[in-house]
Length: 377
Image (tube, rainbow, N blue to C red):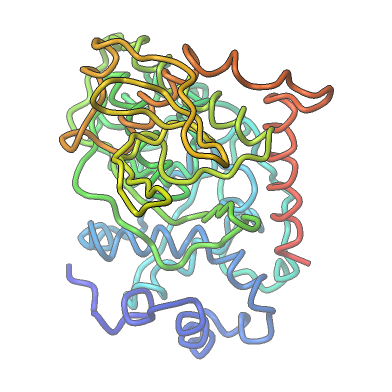
C-alpha cells in the first residue's frame, strides 16, 4: 500500500495545517472547537504512529484491524483511554480500523482530556503491569506494531533485560521507540546496543511533537522515531556493563553541572577554537563548564578572565582514547565526562545543601509532569 502524499499526516507541515485539515473531516470534527494545546495533546501519540507508518511501513494499513500495542503507556500516550488512536486511518487518509492495547506499570487509565466526551471509537484494552507480565497472560495474536514512547533506556532497562522486547521482535513485530530528540536517541541507541540489540534504518524526525520543555531545555514529546532491527533472539543478552557505566557517568556529570547552573559553551568533547586578545586562535577540546584541554600536550586549562590557567594534566593514554573526527558526538561527550570525573571534580566547590544531583532529577521530573497537566487546561 502507498499512502497518498495528500493525506493529512504527509501533506501538513506543522500542527496548524494538520489540525485544520483534520477538523474538516467527519472523524476529526470534534477538534474544531478545541484549544490548540488540547488538540495537540490528544493527537501527539496517534500522529507519531501515523507518521511512522506513512514513512516507513505503509503496508501495515492493509491489515484491518491494525493491532497496535503501546508499551510502557502512562499518560500522554493513554489519554482518554487510548481512543484517539482510532484517528490513525483518518490521519493517513485510508479506510481501516485500529485495535489498541495499552500496557504499562504506571498506566493512568483515568487520564482524561477536556475532549473525553467526543473522543472517537472505543476505549483501548488496558493492562496495568509490565510487558513481560502481559505477554505471559495474553492469548491474543501478536500485535502488528508496537510503540514505546520515551522509554528512557538509560534509566529503564528492564524491557531489554527481561526478554519481553526480544519476544516481540523475534515474533516479527516492528518495535518503534520514541526519543525526545537526536541526543536522547543516541543515548537510547547506545544502551540498546549494549544489550545486544541493533537499530534499523535511519532516525525519523516527526514534525508533530509537543514541546514540554522550559527555556533552553527542550523536551519534544514524540519527536525522534526509530525502530529496533529484526532478528532478536531469545537467548540471555550479553550486556556491555563497561560502556553502560561510561554513559551513566556522562549523565551524572551533566546533572552535576546543571546543579551549579552552568551553561555549556559547546557540545561536551567538541573541538573548539579559542581566540586570544591578539586575535590568535588556539584549538582545544571543550570539556565541561569552564574547562578545556589541549589536544596536543594534554594540558587541562580553566578559562579565566585573564586567559587560560593550567589546572591538570592528561596522560598520553587519555589523549589516544579521544574520539576524533571518526567518532560520534556522544562518544566525545562520554570521553569528556570521564575526564571531568577523574581530573576536575576536586576543583569544583562543594555542593550546597539541598542542591544535589538526585534532587535536580526529581525536580525535572516533577516539572515535566506539571507541564503535561497544563497542556490540557
